[in-house]
Length: 427
Image 1: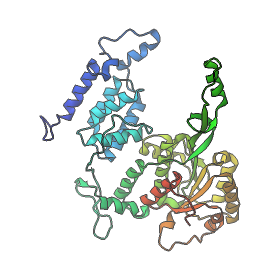
Image 2: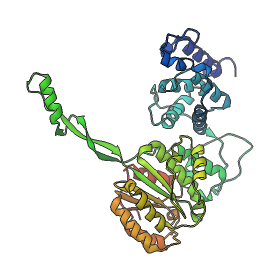
Image 3: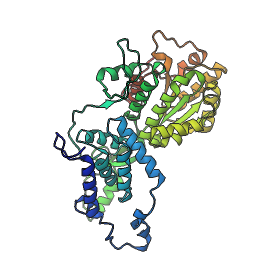
Image 4: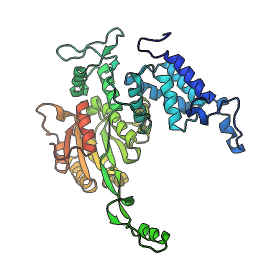
């Protein structure tokens, strides 16, 4: 692309180079704190290593983070190709990667190819880098997102992909995918659902903390009131008040990775990744099958593909049997503190190889510890389903919410339940 396109914006590559030159030359107000590399300001001895950062090779973690961010942008419709990603890495090598605004502007100058990309870039930046609000704030723009998707026939069944053609992701096609059973999807459709799950708004229900924070209303804060009075020389001061802080309620997720759950396990783990990425300190994830495995650390990587590879390597009992009662007993014995006051979510079809009575007794213990117990069964989304397996019959009396987990719409409903937007028994 050369010259000026019809919409009046200059060539994006030339604009990126010119913008980076202005940053490095100190012309713009944002670049005022970054003088040119050939005239560095005096730095104390303990900061000389930072001043010479241009001469050091870029850390591999920076490549991994920026590559994952570019992959998220491509899933949202931004043409963040390999060349643009490399331009962002080279720009960050000259800037301070610990400053969010440096990272924001470096990516916006190098990864966005036009004005339609900016709203999508802002949303992806805020979601990928820990929920920070991307600035500047713009009015919502009407954009058309195009993606490589499968062709859907009149019967609703997924067909083969075209010869690399880019077709619009229309509302009707998105709605079809939202309600389609994950086990009946093609590989391309499942990849599309995984991209949508990566951008899922996984908010969290709040709980009252024991700590206090200053407030306009609430109980009187005697310490602040006395200190304010002493600062005024003993003259009466207005009463200071305080209220309890709120914190996100912890979610403990146990995902069944046995053979009967194989069609749904990967999608459930990607939903767990969205929860961990949103609230890493208030989420714990375990896989259950023939043994209990904690996979929270593996899911803390921002890039979903990298997180799934690490999870796959960490779980030793993929597609094995199911001993839910024994695994739940081990969880309560070793990690029972995680469940205290938390929302406990068990994702399983309820097929139990062991004694169902053991599962029932452990579910009773879990219900006494947890704030709420949610059971996610993918088969509940099937018409005419009845929970007749021994494991489900033993667990049902101790379940607060019995929900489906077979489609994107079901995961959106589950996210709303964890955010406190839905409540009540849904059996």
